[in-house]
Length: 405
View 1 (cartoon, helix red, strand yellow):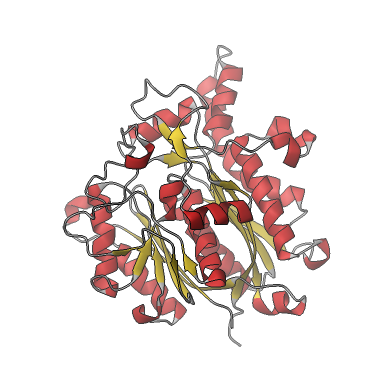
View 2: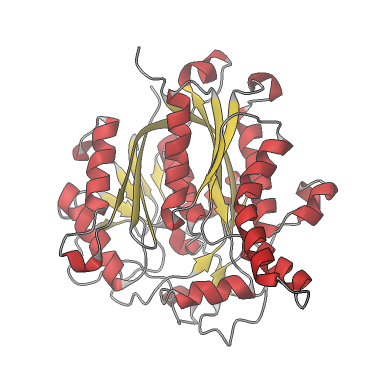
């Protein structure tokens, strides 16, 4: 017997340009950007001042009061998105066997706000470095565990840490569980590091832009690219075994048809980056050809060297201007592990609505890039989409989603 297909039946979103799937998708289709000067603290002494913040989230309106003392902003956003995704899926408790529903999420830049709070509480009491480290490590499990506890899901649980690739890696892991017989997984990622401690870490990467103009700051594949803008948020998805979903009459957004992950060789090895290989493996896993793909959601690092690597990988597989390419994260900033999960949500809604959202603010393609970059929303049938993600240190991931049927 063939392994069951993994289908997406629920989407929950917390993003800078829209809280909730409907608001975010409407703004994303319209090209509404939320990148602005960071307001959560004064960033002027750090060199990078812009961010994609979620400013319309009141935790007390969405999260039980008993959970507020034991969670931080990032976890509360993840709980909100998980609630929305499960409600959207229609998978109530009666559709979630006691040990047949699990949670697999991702995290990378998150945990800093929680860790900073612990450091402040422990400051001057001795042993603070060990305690803060333990609190930080424990946080990763808490983010997934809080979702499991809140919804009484006792099946497989885990958190993947592969930076920006994590949002896709979590979905790939959820798909493995479905193929092994688990009926339902909550998966994806919501990430945030918009606090002073997190900002120090992000700026130390050397990849944040120093631009202060929101319209000229995050410009992937543009001649004026100067780095990326950090953001917070992401998407949580409900992934189910196809037959279980259809048996209860669930609406299906699409099929997780293919997944692959690769790791780049050492920069001094002389070997090429492995993103192109991830694309080829994901297409092969999905049993589709390059000509079947209607749109690519790019990782879009915003740095000239990384953009060129990605553009070369896409061109090698699809040819020059061979496939529409978009990066709606130009409206939110890079959400680290949450970015790819949000792109996956956008890909599924592109299939549903027959529209590819735009890449905003990019005006002049960088020399040597040959991409059909979508800079205004483009309508037309979308049946197969490819989502790409990369993580700091060499992680690459690719997911193919297709229309159900």
